[in-house]
Image (cartoon, rainbow, N blue to C red; front, side):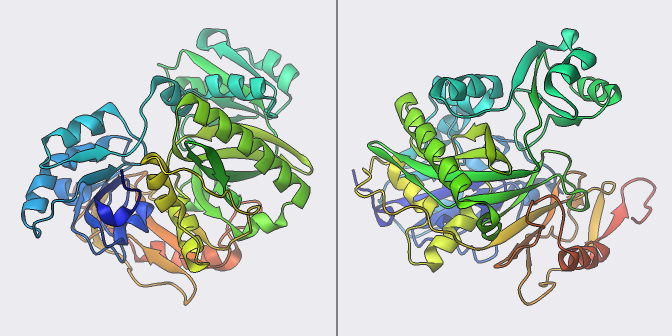
Length: 431
């Protein structure tokens, strides 16, 4: 089997096209499937749920599989090509395996969908237990049934504030910072079907992410990034991921980063033993010289495209290309030197206003060094919680801790949001 992407036709699938760059602008890419439309420099034919439904909303994992039925038509209109096809979703699943069965020619879904790897992706309680077994530092925590949560007892054991999480939540959804009894009851009320909760000690304002690629014979680690989360002005609640900043990681003590990479290497080896191949990432809370591993993502991450772009600019192989090659069975010939810092940051801006039809939106960069990409198309129904834009910059957009925007970013964001005009869905009122 070849490990060279040029020997295949690539079909990517993701929440938005840019999430899969540079695969989406690779010469072998023949089709791009996404939830949101708008792909920047994407040259391959694109199919989006936004165009199909006329709606932009917060897409869930697996939604984009609905577009699989349209791929044969796209391929029929392209030049004859007998190369086998690779479908690259953020994470493999039975839905994606089934979606590709009807495509012509030889098709392979790139990814692993083994039950033990699925448990790592979907169960925070299981992950915490396994990390503790490996000797990786984790927050002090308790698992409790929904009908047995006791605010006073948890506050005594974990101090205030503490973090409450639904074990199956992703991207920060189902994560709450509990200051008072009212916060606890509000979280439980919002998720009546959650039967057990993970309550953890709050371990620091800064969260970093260390990513790597698991090959069949070893693990390659990458530079750390500071995660942006909980920034209200971009529509992000507590714990909700809204961006990454690779340059900000240089503010973290070298000894802390070294320790983070050491434990990330342990996690990568564990994932390899569990049958995972390809990209993974670990989210880590940092407070001074102390760190605590929060969760593990055995998949492509929201920052993978940004890291890939930085690597390509430094003439290194982009991590997304390494991801595909690792899944095709390429061995790790040389793990390379210790991770070297890279730059670049991005922010996801979610819509917090009412639902309405987009009648006006700015599509130009708000500054020479800040690009706005993937704004919704005119005529699209914009739903609360949907990504309304992505901000990209070679410099930092958020404060070093990732919890607030820099003043100039805040000003530029306000200018962009002021450009968004909606025709109201109720009674024809304008937003």
